[in-house]
Image (cartoon, rainbow, N blue to C red):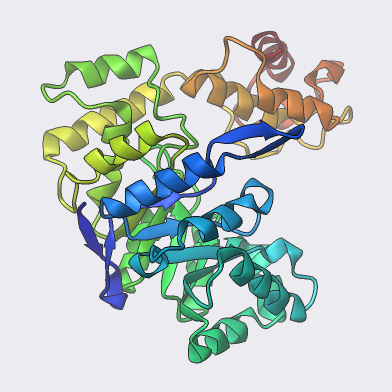
Amino acid sequence: MKMRTFGKLGIEVSAFGVGCMRFPMIEKNGERVVDEDRAIAMLRTAIDNGVTYVDTAYGYLGGQSEMVVGKALQDGYRDKVNLATKLPCWLVKESADMEKLLQTQLGRLQTDHLDFYLLHALNAERWEQMKAFGAREFLTELKKKGVIKYACFSFHDSFDAFKKILDEYDWDMCQVQYNFMDVENQAGTKGVEYAGSKGIPVVIMEGLLGGKLANAPENVQALYDSYPVKRSPVEWAFRWLCDHPQVGTVLSGVSDMEQVRDNLRIFDTVEAGCMSDPEKALIDQVRAAYKSRILVDCTGCEYCMPCPKNVNIPKTFSIWNNASLYGGLEKGNADYKRMVGEGNDPAACVECGKCMSNCPQHIKIPDMLKKARAALE
């Protein structure tokens, strides 16, 4: 297992970090629960083969993830890993809630300390709320007491929000969504490089974009097949991430033992600078091939909103584009169904034309909404 230096922390951590959000599930007494035996075996196999980073969170799998991880790390396994979990910021209604939630997590995980403790899913608004609750002081005090080693955050917002958060506390690590399709989305490449310039290690989540990059569409697979060295889409995606020296650990949310073993193989061969110039050029071509599948040139500016009939026009086009980009047009789309269920049904469009007069891209919105409906329903 290749090891990575965690920026200013100076510690060595495995390139592959096990994400504990997608453990295998089974039916038990009419409920969906984690298959504990399989999950524990998967996690211990990863650790036995060199993985030293385990990532979970308060809300993963309805709270089951932390409990299963706690069981898996018994019998001496806790001492072999850096354990990371996350404070559910959205459940903090007053300052005292932070300590209550932490104690619940320590109990679930059967440990008296955490290596990496993250404020979960920060954005600009949530960061302001957590500052008001004294989150910075809370983290600093936990470090002094030895309850946590490192104060961190995970993030979903714009680069500007990311930079502001990064500059307003002495963070030990940050966790961001990043992959070769998200170079300009959320924190993006600028965010990864900015964190690196401050010596703050970056942990990567959504390296496969929720699995969307694991199964390449035909035009993308043709590019992979044309390259002299044969690798799976998963390996290409992880290899591209590990090429970045700012990256500490790449999380992979494994759901079966086969994925564990495949990740162990992949992360035994990747390190910073592992991509050649022709390989980087290939990924640039792959990104362009994905983008060529975009069906409507909506930028999400929302100038078309609000719709008098409550149609969420940008979201409809985003769902349609994503379904075309990554696959999902061959069956009823779950994201589309969810949007309709929330009262934003494109079928409500009466073609009043108000949206078209405000669209800077000059999209024929009513016509495109019809096409989106036909494809997604």
